[in-house]
Length: 511
Image (cartoon, rainbow, N blue to C red; front, side):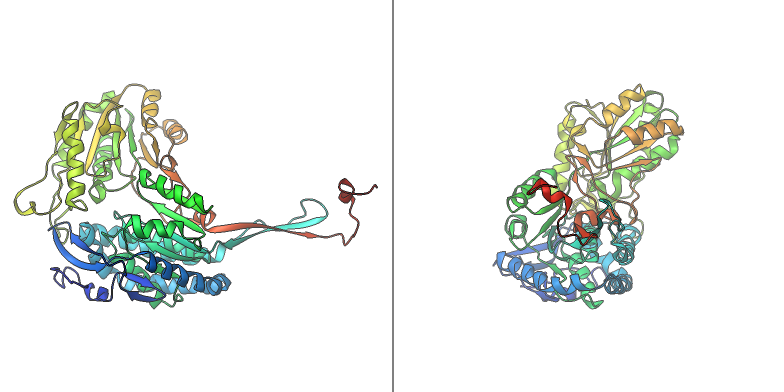
């Protein structure tokens, strides 16, 4: 049942594109067959904007079958042919940038300036990057490593990829899953979060409109328990890529390893933000507020734990709190809005519960509440700064996924780096210093997949993204992602034309 909901055409100009359902299989939109429905809700207002039929196991089977049928032809396409199709894909996305930005803001509550200036252009750039990268799937050059043979390495696609993307960056995460997979010659079935399917569907339709063959990119929108687990466990799926919480990642790994699938996991984070006593204080304060509050803090690389060396600690807390208080909450579509709502009221309440529990052992310097007035119906939460927490406390160790920054002091460099590494996670971190030796030490010793120096958050298509420890393994973006989406094959040619080779005597006969 399609329900266009209450969004106006100005707020959601692309809503008519979803009248045929929230699945995209074999190049066509379709309705789910689970018999159950789900609503996309605007978190800024709490109002339903789209209701659709959820995918069930039959829809997953149909999508996997479409991907399996499309695989031989797409895998056999030349790198140049795949690159050409993906360049057209980038062009179609660029033409639809405003529709994509508005749909992303509507379903996620992101300020329009964030989707216009970060989510959408980043996705277009990522598509253009992988269009070029498709032509550079190279193995080692040929060589006579044994003396009697010539060896070389081939990179080959794996087959059907079954991926699961989260709700915090639905457009970018769809791109990060789909683009390296198809650039390498695989086909894919993506399950977006059921709360935020709109831009994933628009992305898949753009791929088909750009001439990428039907069945290469498929979308099934259903629950994790029903559609997600069936996709991960499907016998015709050769690889699973999952982005989400560490707890769910463990479940995905359990199912995937039962059928010996290739597995890529990008999981939770609790990024440290280490400020040494020679840092530019104003730069660190601005970086902390931006790094903690991007996407309302719903970012696995967000700055969540600021460790500030004692001489700068008091000034950092004071100035960070003051800057946080200038951040403007409001309607994501209003020009003056800096911070939108969280993804849902349930998520808002989860974040509030973390902060409320922390009041028993720490100090809330600013924020720590939901606003009232015109924003009372949305899932808003004020930017929050907390001090006085112990290193082993929940607010320091657990992923909150909201606009909350905890600040702790440290004395020596050794202590600061030890505290930075003292969580189960290792996705991202930053170090703030004017000393190149301190910076080099921090980047060397902090156990994280990305360490920024004097900045926090920027990502680029050419560089990999992925974690250490409980933050998972494998890389998104960059040419390194092909390590996840290709098989490595060693090919070896005999160069001697000798029937009875010397090594045969180790099995039979004498010299």
